[in-house]
Image 1 (cartoon, rainbow, N blue to C red):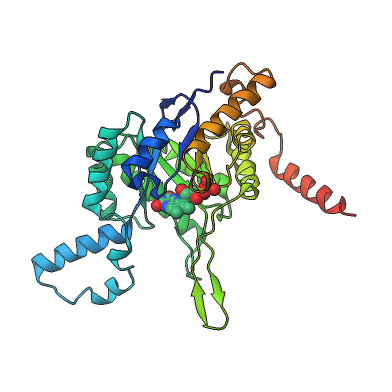
Image 2: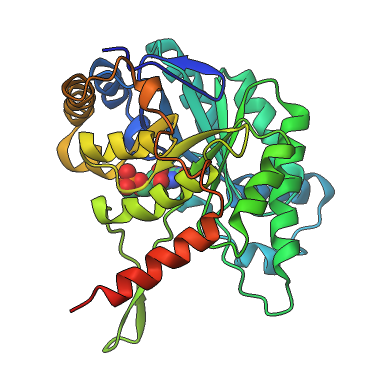
Length: 329
Ligand SMILES: Cc1cc2nc3c(=O)[nH]c(=O)nc-3n(C[C@H](O)[C@H](O)[C@H](O)COP(=O)(O)O)c2cc1C
């Protein structure tokens, strides 16, 4: 079965890609993912806070402004908490490029337009085949309007696109009030892809200790429908390619995402839970499903459940909502 797809202009033998995570920290695991058939591999993110902290430290050192940034620095996570420092990150890209044949996608994670984005060119020079720009931003300032938040995403993308030759994807959260418009703006600003969606790691609280509990929950397939809805809404409406991330655990999950318009299907939790071999199972399961349903190729199925031909997706969403509520007995 022909499962090939084009994502970020990269021709891939199938859409399954291990998403940004610690899996590529270890060369052995990365090789096992490639052996299991990964079509490309996304490295975990390098964070704005790491790059800025390093830039500030260098500036402090050379300009002898010791202490003047102490307050600003105190808001940043301790740079020791990061698994890879900026130089180690570049080295990781080089090592992965030497060890693997599949495309290696680097990831930058931040929220402001600034000099830290220049680091993307060093990732490109280290051999990254593409870049994922992850905008993980919680808008907590009541004085900040949504247009400012969205404009910043576009400006960050423009800064990176202006400096790079390699393709750039933007990894977004679903929490924008006019997501379709923002996706269009990102597309017009030259993004090669959109990755839907960032998962926000929701802290709980410990009521006895009066502490915030940070716990990382892996996903399950129940997180997929939110992604399916937005893939279906955006598919065919923007030129950038689409990747799904969040809730893909089975071959059927992957089939659904492709039907809704995904060109790439990223998996993390399922691989962390079941190991790299899960990738092969999902790929084989997809191929079997397509054969059983008499498709000739994956591309024949791609976007078949898109809402592109739906005359009014907003009315359609409301109708579904109303009918669903009224169907409850
Ligand atoms: C342990 C762990 C580390 C992650 N690290 C990153 C990261 O560095 N950058 C990023 O963009 N996403 C990161 N993610 C999010 C994943 O790339 C992915 O978007 C999310 O887990 C949803 O996909 P899934 O349902 O297949 O797990 C991480 C997820 C996990 C579980």
